[in-house]
Amino acid sequence: MDQSTHDVRRTNWLNIIHQCQNRPSGTSVKQWLAENDIKEKAYYYWLRKFRKEAYDQMQLPTAAAKTEVAFAEITMPLLPAGSDTTAVNASDAPPAAVIRYNGLTIELSNDISEGLLNRLLREVYHA
Image (tube, rainbow, N blue to C red; front, side, top):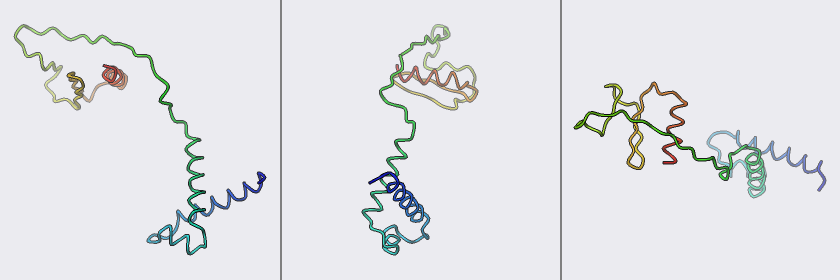
């Protein structure tokens, strides 16, 4: 099959798929295909080809790309002897979000910067 034949078929099936997806509500795909004398297997074959083509064109990040692990030192304020060490709050306002992971608890307020939040999440993930 030469390229022009493939292009004509591709254009034809793209049009058919578009028409089927814009079919009247209440009409199933199977009904629409039967009414338009289109073979169901051929329809799904071409639909699968177009979906795969669209997927291949997407720029998905690869799982193999690993980032180097970086460590960040987080300093904690010194508490007076006998004080409660389970909660260190900068204000009396309740936290907007709480992250608990591997025995570590981080309370976040709404005024946290995006950069600090990204860094915290990255470090907690690698903890």
